[in-house]
Image (cartoon, rainbow, N blue to C red; front, top):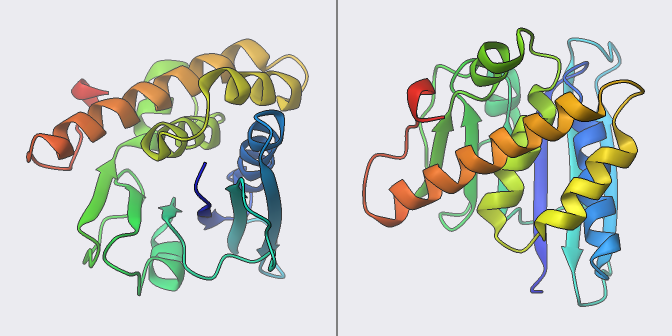
Length: 195
């Protein structure tokens, strides 16, 4: 697997650090070299948060993401802070339920209703981080489904494994659909009825 750098951004309390840990564990169980780190504002809940994962078969010399291949933003503040500037090859995924002002500079831009789809399917936003994880992993096409599923199952908070596995499947399907639309030259914005 070629090295891929992932940057998951949002606000504290959205569960992106847990999603990054799950992504890292999926990479480890797939036999890859992995580095994972995170940072968040002093106000933890509600402040900007950032989680980074590097996965690949080559040695990782620096544990921080320098040139992200994938950037996920789940808040307007995170988009402003981390979504720009990106190189035009980077994949930028924004949650259009929460990020409404976007000026994409990447040609690989996906606007998906991640939080809204989670709320619609599960009655709350509690597993939106796992839906987002499914989207990112499916678009990367390098993270094996079974390893991702195992990581979610083992890391899901007690009593939430079944819902989180369904959330992972929902996100994986959203990512697959968005990738198909993008590859066919269509609009990269996925509506809820497509999710």
